[in-house]
Image (cartoon, rainbow, N blue to C red; front, side):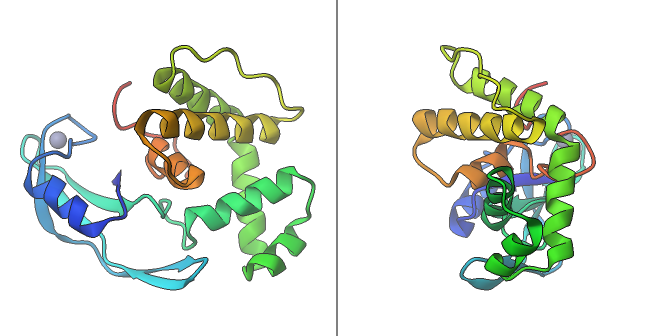
Length: 194
Ligand SMILES: [Zn+2]
């Protein structure tokens, strides 16, 4: 699985041009059909996705190219999930957040639980990303709780990315920086190093 730009034509050009690296071995990925279609719940309504699949020319492993608006195994757009996390850290209850976003309360509670469980790991990962993107960056001040610290690290890493590569939606950047694993069960797969 690899997180790519949401712009389909750009992904196609990168794939055909051999510009996408294999997350397993750093070989070059080539086109390999499509993954099954899925529906992503977005702020602007449902969006049908049929992600591209790619195959590594070195190790022959196949990878789904998930657009940065999505997270691995989550049906909702990452920006919607991000809004819920921000609201929760600001003190809003999950039921209110769910009704405001038009999502199921259990779904929202699931996002918040997973984010809280992974708060320490996410803080460490995004702090590392921020420092990698901006070596001049000083230490990140504690924000008052585990989840607030994690959210702060996500925001700072997204800002560092924007300063370096141009503006973008902070949560889409977070999706990219976590390799789509922001709310997964495994550690974030950082696509470049480590
Ligand atoms: Zn490979």
